[in-house]
Length: 398
Image 1 (cartoon, rainbow, N blue to C red):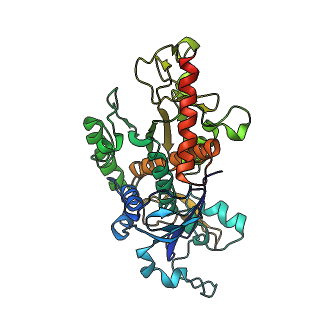
Image 2 (tube, rainbow, N blue to C red):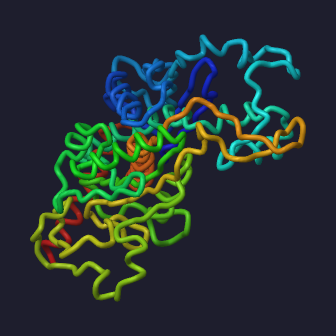
Image 3 (cartoon, one colour):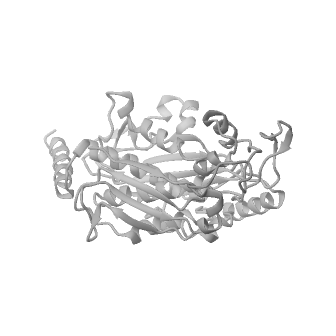
């Protein structure tokens, strides 16, 4: 059994759609729970005017009845309020031609514009950018909210916080607050270091005045995992590979680190690997009788969860739409030109953390379903509880 999802829709089309398969029957879900995650994605200092237009909410289209999943595919629709201003531009039944409004013939460096029009043989890059837009991630967050809801049934909590933005690094507390999002969401930049937040806001204001954009990094933490999710036996079952794949699919993400990440390559092994303790000392996420002195591995060893907190950092490049455009070529004339400017954010790093949480939730929910199966929530719960009981019994008999 697997958690699978797909999305459809364009940035300025009528709506986005998310379809989720694999959820067991009987999982309690509400639109309000999903909408709360969508609202978190829309927040953040440095966001553009689009976030003032949209009020993302889902409409159930299938798979849910009386507040519970049915075991069938779940379909959700998120209306685009801006569609009213774009009907003639994005009309599905409109006539192709040279005189369509808001054509994009000056591709933006760093975006999918140029490669997309070449690959799909289009004349107007709007045919590419409407789907390549990060607006699509609203549907991903909706799908991830259902994965998060499933994980909550088993005591798994997922949060994130910004660790750098515009070259300013935060210094979060050594012991992160729990629940993490309760603290991070109180900050417009989702950062846990007030001094760094002030400096970040200054960088954002400077970039906005210059018509520029900023990137940054977020850290995602998942607590409460059982050990043994994922597997070492095949490349496509390794949990770290699955996490990296989905996180790297987020628009503008250029790097993923787990645990120490690249820092592990700079240290000797004695300063990288986490000593195993025979008795719980720090309090492992799932008390199975063992503990770790440190968590440099970020909760993963050999492609499998260890039971320690999963720690993943994600790096996002600056958004490629600049209000002070870079040089490009006009596809219509073949001459040098300034790149097209579309309405955009100065930075979306805080929102990217929410999207990254959704992607992590999807990978972990998939790994839970892969290992424990179950057509109903009750069956899945019995399978998980039996596994944890067996682990504890194994340790007790050692």
